Amino acid sequence: MKTKLKELRARHGINQTELARRAKISRQTVSLIEREEFMPSLLIAVKIARVFDEKIEDIFYFEEEELQ
Amino acid sequence: MKTFFQLAIRFVIGGAVGYTFIYVYLNDILILPDLYEFAFPAALLLTVILIGLMTWWSVRYRTIRKVIQQPLTGEAEDEAEGVMYRAYSDNSLSTTLMLFICLGLMSLTLLTEQSFWFLSVSLITLLVSFIMSHLTQRQLYIMYPERNLPKTNDPDYAQRLLDVSDDGEKHVILQGLYKTNISTMSLFLVAIIVLLLYSMVTGNSQLFAIFIVICIMAFTNIQYIRIVRAKN
Image (cartoon, rainbow over all chains, first blue to last red; front, side, top):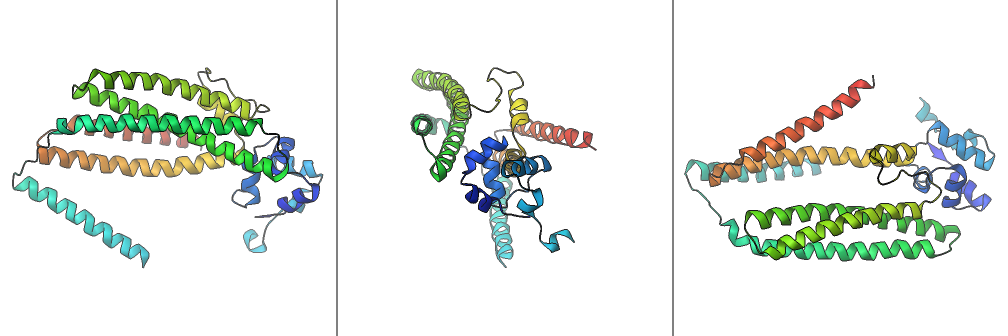
């Protein structure tokens, strides 16, 4: 899974701690997702998407071969 | 190729150790080291390690306090949060190690009839390690005031802490515990072999310790399978 979370965060000018605070998740989780070391659950994906007012699929996406 | 060499090295070391022990056993060469001779330096070493761990804990405790007091923003805030998290992890490890070493020092002092001072040191540090452990847990509330963390006196503290952890944190915990479980089981097996060989070579039976280790291994494996089996 790939993510545009870091770019999105930079565009909105918020750090990981602030995003974690707004999405009510831990900063560790934000960091893991950005480093693509952890695939977020649907609940966390929705929480993050809500902070940026974006669709989940605009933040998280899969390479075609991952979906085969 | 790397795996082959690793396997070959392990094979050679294992063979050499096995051959030595069997040779010693079959030729009735009893090695009876006078453990009492090493008891005093060992107690001294454990005391020094305890003092070192206490100092390390104090340094890391102050690091967290310093970071909390700094009003930071942007990337600096993220970095500071990382520093705080690592310092908290270090302190959790320090207090746990202190508890184990205190118990080791206490056992050594009582079983080898060492100076009363070592027993006092172990009892005092045991008490101090409990206080430090409590302070470490309390720091968690200051670090994350917005989180609904369980109280330290909660009888179900470990379960509640797991419940308030999010999926990312649980992922990290799972990875850590999975690796720890694999190494623990391997180390227990090595411990049984070492205890068995020690018993054979010195004639000093470690059967009781071997059975204790086997009981722990059986209990932890049964507990794991019981939890996993129920979630079908």
